[in-house]
Length: 345
Image (tube, rainbow, N blue to C red; front, top):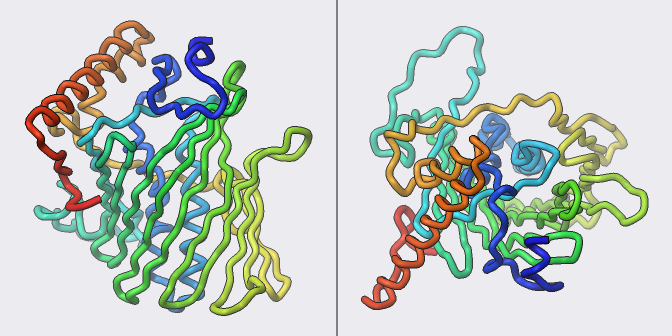
């Protein structure tokens, strides 16, 4: 009712004040790190010997990247990042051999302190407030693979649902092969907002590599009003200049997906229920910069954990007021905002 008193159908929700109790206790910037909850799948793209196999592996990593972002069955909303907020983390890849590998030197000049050349490093920054644009980057130095993306989230009130349109794109770069895979992102929907809210993905996405000519079409299917299954996804992978796919995938993006080859062979493609999520490593709060996500939002997070909604709301209000005051000061001084880790947007 708090939400309905402020909105009308089709309204952009950017300026709507949402109740604090629906927050997820982490920033949207940290949520984007979940794209790399399976860093071994990401780096294995670079290990594939042929362009065809690399495209299949890009699709496998991409389709495995969404289930980790949902921590529970009830929909929660991450914090809207503050302009200039950053988030750093890294993942240590599981050893491919059984014998212990020698300790690797840590990087002093890499994007994430404390990581090694064999880590997958992740950096995210909120580079714009109006419109709300997040940029993020990941790399594994030893595998010569990197990923960069920007997403502008645009929310709309749809009656019984909230739609979040993800405008932007990402790019997987295999530097050894000079290949760049351009991809887009599905939209998100918060359904049943007056009862028990849940999240689904929807929309058509594409992945393409201009050098090899391979491409993929991926469709996240929203549940029909009557009948039908939740969380369905289908995908088709195409060879250069072919109109008929050589690889078809279907299933649930948060469950099991199956592949069918042009030869007629069927196989399991991904089973997210059996895939272990590799935990990301983040510096302790006391070692973080004041504008890093977890340190920036720590008072809100702590009070939400303690179920002190009033104190969490007050802490959130202080952050938002500080951001408004800084914006007014820049306007008075006719200063342009300069990003912290991105050279351009």
